[in-house]
Image (cartoon, rainbow, N blue to C red):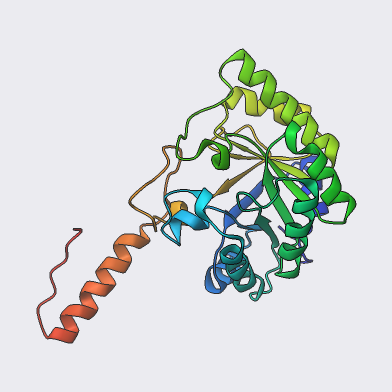
Length: 262
């Protein structure tokens, strides 16, 4: 990234035209947002995975809007150059009218774009948000808010394949500036990428997308109790934190430090 101006939805949209891959990570607090921004990550998502990796809920369905807004404000206070995108929590966009109310709250808290799950069935909502001046990143393929904890690869059967292709075309037609494709068959994700004018951002959908997004905690090994199969952590912060805490404990208690990974 050589352009030092603020990242915008339009910048993301045009990455497909210039052939530059898009990297996106989740961020849920001020220091993480600053660090990722300093590293040059262009898109920061305050996503609903916050529910599990930060707040300890069993799934994304438990996340309340006020909880997400609090973390969104913290990320926005970092004033990142990166584009700040915020997820719609489950149950906050059941109608286009409700989505508009939620979307305005997200923008007031610091979101520069929003993300919602769903394709054909959410196209009217996407259209209304875009009409109101709220940029939308769509999300198709596996929809965690609908699947609950039943994570699986999608798009392998002819019926699912056709449905996801229709979703991709619908969100593009409704005005989304990009679309996340989650846990889809790699061949299908690549086909969608070739057929759309807007960029695709994959997660667990192969390397044929226009970009990739990951949950920060998965990337750095900060949530060791569960790791998606497609993730290869680039660090082991869980181990580093345990080790630092044990060192502090032994120094405080005046005992010899013994390393352990338990």
